[in-house]
Image (cartoon, rainbow, N blue to C red; front, side, top):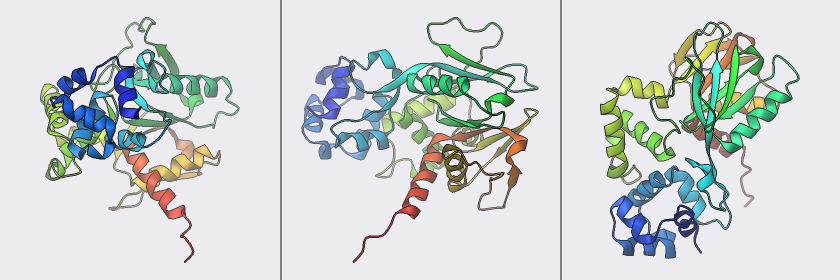
Amino acid sequence: MSNLQRLRESRNYSAHDLAKKIDVEVERVIAWEEAAENISNQELSSLAYFFGLSSEDLRDSLGKEEVTLTTNDYYIYANGLNDDGWWGHFGIRLKGHASSMWFPITIGTANQVSNVIRNLSSREEWMVVETLNNRVLVLKPASMARLWLLDDAQDQPREDWNIPIDGYSGQPGEFYRALEEYCEDWRAYDDDGVSEFVMSKVNEFTDAHDLGVDEVRKMVIETQIYNLEGVEFSHDVDESKLAEIVNGIEIEFPDVIFDLSNDNYDLYIPSDEICLINMSRRSLNNGMKEVHKDLEVPDEE
């Protein structure tokens, strides 16, 4: 059984159901499940959106026997798959702020956050949290005014509940890829671009919230940096610099000064002056790929 068929059946959809959902003939779905190479880039984009994924993650999974996928579908619908699905919300109240910022997270992330918080050994310790609305949070838990882990089944805090505009459980990874294309509309319909079906969802979203390119760039590309008093500075950071910061934290040797530079100018901020860096997950992943590529040892001739 192909991974695409497993994904479809885990959501209790027949091939006819899936074909209807993404507006193709059922014969196309059957062909995809028999041979993944039959899926065009545009078709892969629509499929990824439907399953709550990015097309990159879906493409990587098709040729593997076992795979764990991060999806904004509710985790209880995985039906035996290893999907790390949506669980609830992570809330952060910064010092000087009147309300918390809320981020949808998976059950795997909820367990990770709970474990880190329970075992903090220093006020200077950092934590990296991936969310389902295309953000990665690099934060010092002990520098926050308040932290929440809120299961979807729990009551929402009174007078402190403002979910992100991109949805209660976030959006599929392909949605954020499409938002990037919205910022660079000359790429929107090339062979590697997102499908017209997904772009229509983005256009509905930007129209409903009256968002221009600048607002979308801040949402999906720019990095927000907060000092210890909770003051925000939004900045376009090079992807490789984001990867260097996260790599240092993950090996438990964070930089004393964070390099937040870009192609236009250099920017350095002492890490002990920062409590939170809110960065694009897609930008970080791109930076990680570049870092790992640079570390690869060339084959001997």
